[in-house]
Amino acid sequence: MMLKLAWRNLWRNKKRSGIIWTAMVVGLWSGLFASGIMLGMSDSMVRNAIDRDLGHVQFHLPSFTEDELLTQTIPDAHNVLENLRSKKEVASVTDRILIDAIAASSKTSGVVKLTGLDEIREKEVSTLDRHLINGNWLDDDLKSPAIVGKKLAEKLGLKLKSKLILSFQGFDGSVVYANFKVAGIIQTQSSVFDETHVWVRGNDLRKLTGRDDFTHEIVVKLNKSEQTDSLEKAWTGEFANLKVQSWKTLVPELKLTADLSGMMMSIFMGIILFALLFGVTNTMLMSVLERYREFGILMAVGMKPARLFQLILIETLILALSAGVFGTAFGLLTVHWFGLHGINLALFADGLASFGISSKLYTTIPPDMVWILALMIISTAIISAIYPGWKATRLKPVEAIRSL
Amino acid sequence: MPIISVESVTKIYNGGAVPVQALSGVSFSVEKGEFLSIVGPSGSGKTTLLNIIGGLDQPTSGNVVISGVEVTKVNPGELIDFRLNHIGFVFQAYNLIPVLTAYENVEFIMLLQKRSSKERKERAEFLLEAVGLKDKMHVRPSQLSGGQQQRVAVARALASNPAYVLADEPTANLDSVSAEQLLDLMEVLNHQHDTTFVFSTHDHRVIARAHRVITLRDGRIESDVLQEQKEVTK
Ligand SMILES: Nc1ncnc2c1ncn2[C@@H]1O[C@H](COP(=O)(O)OP(=O)(O)O)[C@@H](O)[C@H]1O
Ligand SMILES: [Mg+2]
Image: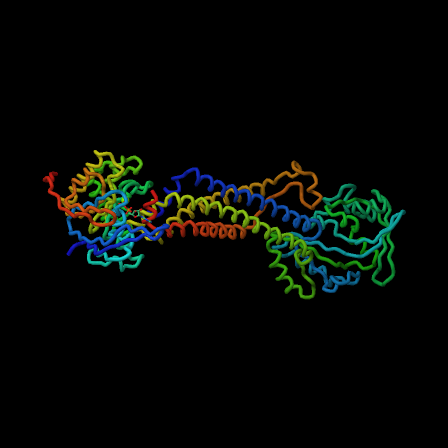
């Protein structure tokens, strides 16, 4: 009966109920859509970094992370690689040699991070090869091919097939000089990255140093990125002699970006709901004041104030929760749809790509956010009922009836 | 024992700039089955008196005993239940909940009393038939005439099986034909079911129908007379 009464009362002033209902639906929908875009952007930044070279989990010698020396090689790397490849959570694995080196052209020279890759496996783990803007990948026919960042190429005046001399300290402490030929030029979203990196075949470096089976870094790409944290933990135990780090530990700023946009979304939705709270309160208050005399008569004939409060609460809950469900459902559907099909950002702005965001944006909302949002909506509904409901219970029947 | 007993009731309103003495030393009692009218010019204290004997307002001094209960001593929460179970109310206008049908308006009171659905259905149908609105049972108040709405209000007032029905100027917003019909209805209910009615009015034709008339003037009882009645025929 209370439900029936509440439901019909909401239809009494269709326009007023409709306006606040629509405002809630639109507010939640647009809030969710905007959050989906925001989270999609940060997700894309994180994903780009993971895809470019980071991978989900990396393995090093514990001491390597402090001093990047040639000698800090992973013991028994071959078996570690085989072991990881056999795991079902793992999508692909590759290894890298990392050396501080000096790159010199005929013109000038500069300090670089020299990376020795497995040219076949690297393509399964990272998207480095897809950032080539010129020339070919390291599986080129050239003898001793090297790939350089665009910025570095400009700095050293390198073109395709230009000669590049790389020098670094070998295992015995003596300096190794080696001739490479530029096979390709890479451009990523980060110009700093592009200015400081040179990639060659790992096996070419092994030949140069006279040791044929060493590596510094093992990079793992997982089937499911959500498993990153749990696997980081499990592998820390399993590979006790190695330092196991997820992308979150490796680049804390990246984790911060992801966390921050989650928090921003909560604050953002909180602000929207806070504004809606006043709207709903106001609507319900108007509806209570309009029915002052009616409530007076109800209390006169025997309805208790608590019942009246209950009625207002039910009315508010029906209004706010139905709008909440619709708004959230529409919002999530929109986010889901654009999560599958993407929004073509090139239509809006060319510049976005330079922030490390792909030109196609895929919106996303983490599932646990939905629960937080549901909780926020329910509390908004309840809070907005309190004042109008209290107001109704405070009325004096005698005065309310006289106020004709 | 009288069902309503009013003993030296005084009411002073202190809300405004000057205190208003609405009732001064009013005493009378009402027996079961009476058909009593409280009359007097506007401002004479009729509404104030009805509110007090309806447990809606407290007297400044004096005593009101309803069905043996001293209502001036009942706490506000219990007073609501007391009103629900002992008193039926008919107000001047807009008595009904607009979103409920005539039937639901009558049923609502019994829902507050937590009566069984069978009981509610039987009594609501019986009462709506008694007030002559069986065919309008599932119609909302807005589709009823003023007179029909007041008849539904009477049915609602009786739904709780009250000791008596209080009606404050129930005919004030009605045309004379509807007013007559409402009085006919109340008289029949009074006659056939021994229902006690206390109603206020300043309409002479309505006053003529009462069996007993208490006249108020400036918050005092000016006269309290029994009137000779024509035979009521059904
Ligand atoms: N809430 C109130 N505050 C102050 N004075 C009031 C209030 N209610 C009624 N009065 C005064 O009390 C007197 C009696 O009023 P009322 O009982 O409404 O008379 P009636 O119903 O016969 O017209 C009037 O003078 C009226 O102005
Ligand atoms: Mg009056």
